[in-house]
Image (cartoon, rainbow, N blue to C red):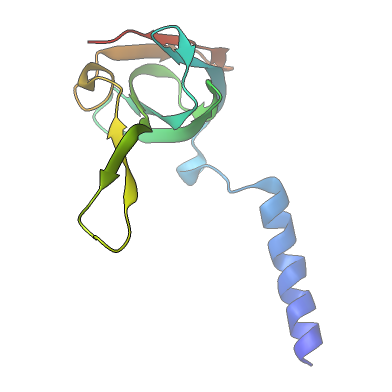
Length: 136
């Protein structure tokens, strides 16, 4: 009986995993891809977030890996935030003397995240949108 229950659950969950989750409330989402560089170099790992400019303020987030991102989002004007951190060579968090942990820093300036100046206009059908970020 246990085996049948596990199979039944697997048969139900597998299609959900393969098809993904539908957009809430019938929203039409479109693919946007692109690259994100900081001072001319691809961001190794980070996050990108597209937030609608409408009153609803819906947001859509995706990973940045090796400077590339893929996201599904609504169409229209968006504000865009980029966040990334990196380890600081030779610096450690010493709050636990028994275990030194490498220290990191958020290195993307606030004008690209918490006080973002980045925008994008996502067309129906999706697009490729690149972001070339500069230091301070």
